[in-house]
Length: 197
Image (cartoon, rainbow, N blue to C red):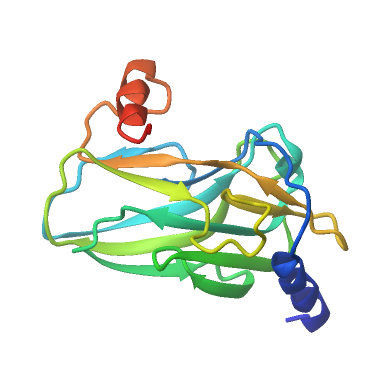
């Protein structure tokens, strides 16, 4: 581990007042395949399975790669046994994705190379003790963001020594919600309405 890079990145996470960038096309989400294409899973009780928390870059600045992310996973079934495992390439992990939020950092740029190719942040190994019908899990901002100017899930770009933060879209995933996909507008509207104020 290269200490200067870790310290610089840690300080960048803790920097107090920077101007946030607008939302981009990159998504931080929970997926049921490591390629980041499946958003819904039928999940029976008394079964073990795996999910992935991925940064899926779009056409914004994160398409060139990231060196970190900050977010939390909200509404994962609380009665299930779950073990988050960080990407082995991570050099710094603060907090946890299910425990109020996490900051994860890498010594080197995690570059997908091709837009839409995901960057692994965490693998969730879990055991479902019960059935949760039409249960939606969301990726949201860290419960105590390291920088008050960034009230959003975010990634950190590969632009050392600046380490620019970029607000990104927090994804939705669902257990036992047949037909839930990212490309079905009627289903998306129904799910989104559950979280509108």
